[in-house]
Image 1 (tube, one colour):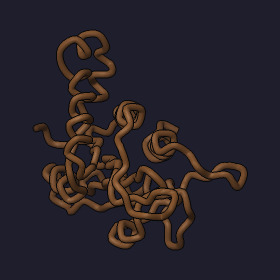
Image 2 (cartoon, rainbow, N blue to C red):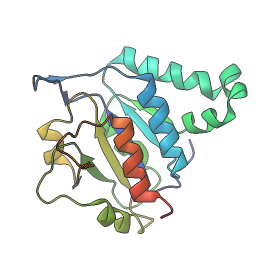
Image 3 (cartoon, rainbow, N blue to C red):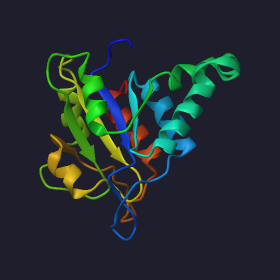
Length: 190
């Protein structure tokens, strides 16, 4: 496996996350999240996008979806999609994702977590963009599915990134939309 060339990667966690009753659950993989976050990640120069789920059936499904576009008919039919899906890494735990991403760097991976609710001591995107200029310091951006990552996840992360906020009080973006906006703010040409 090739070493990472970008010091930013994304991990989409399907566990531990909350459901709407604030119970800790494992959410199901969605084809749209896998495709769209991979495409956004690749567009902004990332070469790692981790799908993290403890559910074996969900990992197999993610590998099957990505595999369809990485080899054979799917790869030949849509080379652009192949390029995006080639950066997908499927794993059972966040620890494995951190360890795999770490293999390309000497400095320890720093985890950056985000969610829809504002939190004290959060970095804004400009702050993180500045930190990303130190190319030998790796950052893994943690995104949650369902109704967001658990409090324990927030307590163990190295940094908290402020949420994407719109003009009104409604704030319930899809994770793939939030990922695209964040990546544009962190790695966009402007």
